[in-house]
Image (cartoon, rainbow, N blue to C red):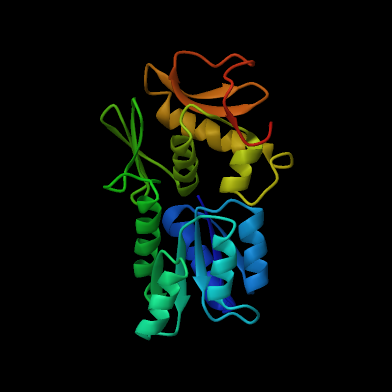
Length: 243
């Protein structure tokens, strides 16, 4: 999952970037001005935006209004303003949640998780499931469960599996995976994705009789319960540009 943090307090923004990456395995981009944040939000696909109200150029309310006119994504607003009027204004402007500074990181992380869960990224218990495939993911504990077996995951493996779960049955190109999970270009870092997928396969497929992670030659990867790899000309559904 990809999160955008827009805050002109450089130390705080970097702290949130590191903390969210470590706590949830998120890819986190940072912008320190409203214009830069708006440009990123319109250029890339984000699962959530953490937006400060007090910015050096346009304030967060203006940015949110411009963003809402073109994109719909969860927005958590941060501000030192703790008046009821400011909170109401933020919510009326389209914010999904409102957190007053100073705040604890654990509270922010919990609100981020709740917003993503509310958007259908995870189940009511925080565990994502994959349709008819007997696999579940607990992103908080970084644990997968397949056929009753608990599987420990790294932050990278957890983020990759979560992305595949969200697009079950859809071929994800290496470019799509790279853009959502790593701030890299797939062409220059293909090996990063291949290694990550290989390690995830060893945990999710190797111990079981049925495979669920498949390589579609020349196109990318798909999470689907099949006995063998998909032919190169199958299936018709794909996400992202060709690998």
